[in-house]
Image 1 (cartoon, rainbow, N blue to C red):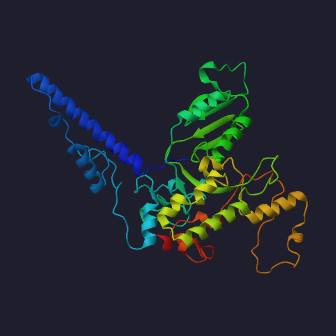
Image 2 (image 1 turned 180 degrees about the horizontal axis):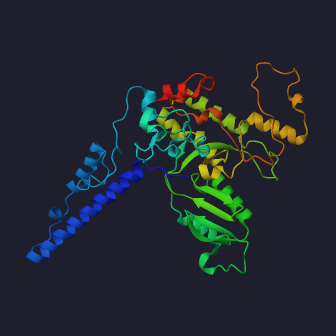
Image 3 (image 1 turned 90 degrees about the vertical axis):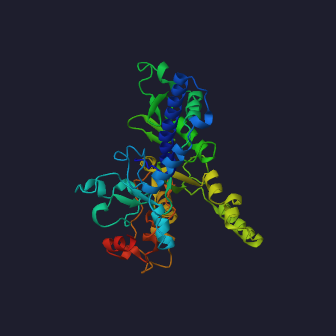
Length: 384
């Protein structure tokens, strides 16, 4: 549920501070001109070096903020990029830091939390004082860039959302509250329909795939987040619409697979470069636009039901249809197969499916052979 400060917002804030300083300088120069009855000269008034030197100073020293207030500035924001190996460079680019004092012996902020699953690598963290405070993002993990919340608020009000000013609690006590980026904007009487409409729009690419939609049925709340810095991860979508023939199957099908393979072969034959590939290709972007893959953040993941693999989804479907487990493998049990728990009969429906369980690991931990056969600190030693 926490937000990450990435390079963009950090540099934007720094620029804002420096620009404010520049405007104050221009204001002082204007005052002097008026007092001394001089002509105003733009070149004399605007000192571009304020912004240039301010940015250079912060990037060179890592002290983020005004040079004169260096004591209150954040330290160590910019670092020299690690270039030992390609893997160490990638790992350094995906490193996150928790701004907690290193000398405190607090265990809570250092421990791995359940909500970190798939977002933070469970093995890759340094030993010593920074243990658990410096984390690394998992392989397919992504941080949201953020978008404007205006269009979604307008869309909601066109879809029978009562604005907060017009809401009367006595008339409609069971209405669902609608929050956009933590701000209560209104209420809606048919939350089920609203959520499914917005979800459908996100899946077909009308709304940004970064948007997270959280419906809390118990508290009667529908929360929408479009802000920057949310850590998200991709999952396969499982079709949950009762009217569709592929219900309880992955939305990803043979058609999508053939499209991807044909495109790869065509590009290989044409000799298209890597950079052009990403622009032209149907690829990952195409899968997101077709609603095959969906990005979920930690908060939305709590409202989703995620199956571990497509095979497990198949077993669960068979169990729901009453097909016995042994019918799947008529040759008898494979003695070398992994022992897996039986599908849970209490589960009503799945909404998503993991792309691959190994995606919980970070860059360095994923190059360890058989990490699941090691004692856990051994993986940490190799990763760090």
